[in-house]
Amino acid sequence: MTREQLLQFVKEEFGVLPDKPFDNDFDSMVLRHKDNKKWFALIMKVSKEKLIGIEKRLVDVLNVKCDPMIRQALLKNKGVYESYHMNKVHWVSVILEEVSLKDVVPLVEMSFDLTKKGKVGRR
Image (cartoon, rainbow, N blue to C red; front, side, top):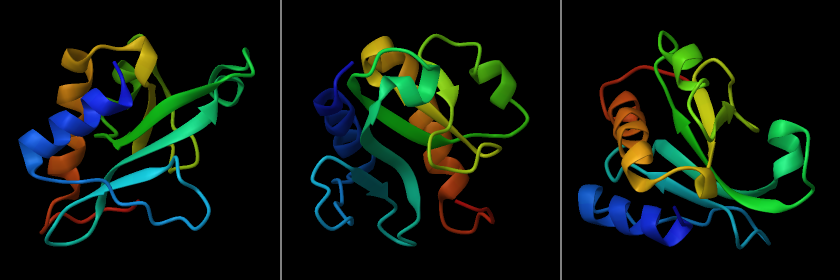
């Protein structure tokens, strides 16, 4: 899937547009709840080497929050890896080009639910 497909899904499903909060970083985007401003996803360009140790090529990566109880099972899925630059217990990273929209939808929905208002958690 592409970054654009993901952003279109999030806009249609949650009415959320990406936020670019990092100075001088025009590739990274945060997807936040409108009410509590908590992140439910981070999209960024990362060297594939940082996630899987091979191929020094930039790829679009999606970080989403996950239930720690199912994290190990998620890591067995194609395209899902240990989180990059986030808490490794509560987040996973997804290389977008390795997955389909249908594979990402439940991950984004879970992350959205885990970070919505009234939920206690860490980034």
